[in-house]
Each structure stands twice: as C-alpha cells, then as structure tokens.
Length: 80
View (cartoon, rainbow, N blue to C red):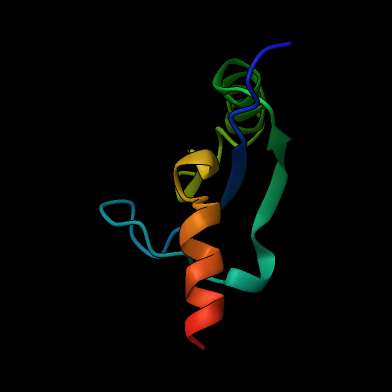
C-alpha cells in the first residue's frame, strides 16, 4: 500500500492576480482532498480549465501532508 500524502485542492477569486488574497473566503471552492499529488493535480487541472474565462479565479494544490505534524500538534495541545 502506497503512503498517503494528503493534498487539498481549493480555488477562488483573487482581489488582484499579482497576489494570493481571496476576494471572499466564504465562497472558496473546495474541490477535494486527495491521497497523492498526481490525483490532486488532475483535479486542479480540471477545475482550472472550467474557470478559464475568469481571469481572477485561481486554483491551488495545498500539500497538507507537509502541514500535519502529529507529534507537534499533541505537544501544542498539552501546552494549552
């Protein structure tokens, strides 16, 4: 069984195409969660192609597995 490396795909309209600041966080498009980068990239590509006519719409792949630190999170919970 391959190691699961969680990736999230989200998108939304940006205030300015030169920066990553979403216009309205309440309207983010959560495309999904994927067990590997290849699957996440396919989902990202599909979502991005659907929004090609909106210059302010951007989709991103978030490498969530890099943000997860179980040992560190447990220590933080113990400290608070």
